[in-house]
Image (cartoon, rainbow, N blue to C red; front, side):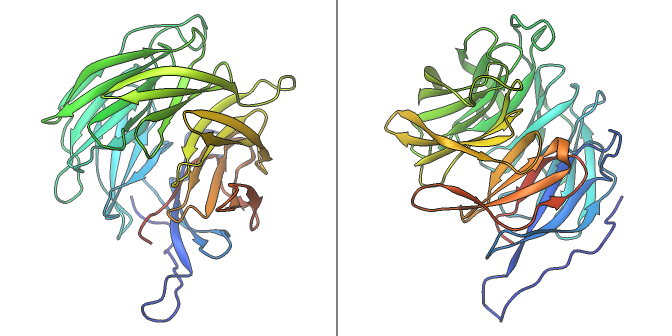
Length: 359
């Protein structure tokens, strides 16, 4: 376990903003041609140009990676049947420890607002797992496992529950767990390190909800449906989601499309969604409680599994799983328009891109 290549950072004069910031790439390691671990890189804060600088080894299938609020630690799921989650020191880039989730194929994770607990969404087992986070960033043994129930009409993808995403609302009081197999979003309270179900939002049978993003105002949320290529606008209050407007995320015809990640701009005026199949980023404008499709930007790769905005909101990055590249886009602050920026970065099977918040 360790770092394959040292991380190189550049900066300006003392006290000036750094010219580059760190970025990490989640990837699959057990697939043919797979990565060696979590990719390490930088991006230029002026033009979004990405570079690779190394790899964190000793992590199997780190398909989703997050950082602690203070930037001191990284956490990655190990997406395999054994089901583990790994803690990493962000300064030394060394693995601290790893613990079993008790579920199969964890594909997403989040920290609670206090930073004292971590929760994983285990896809194949359709379950959630809770872990205490210690002062040194390490994870304690699992303290709770919540099992989802339900299925959908797609016999290949919805034979049972498949927990795909979990995120806290903007206030941090409730956690929304999106389940593709059950066509549901389960909303939980979280007190004393324990999840407790408070509501269930049902979506159209066969929709296959995958990810959710909350509007900064806390009154609206957007759900990306993987199986019917839609985005659904939901009203939200007191831990309850109510599905409303539904829009297609890609034109009809052509290859079947599978939406993946959904993002909301920091000012709440724009929503972005990655289209796998159409290989684009869909751009929606926010008008009150509804969305309007602005257009599609070619992603510059194939099968964009994950997209992310940097802390400034000035750049959007797309991890293109099937073309082994990560692409960069400059974001126009007023219109939300995306413009390709820099040269695509080649890296093995990227499925998550994490631009760090603090440097």
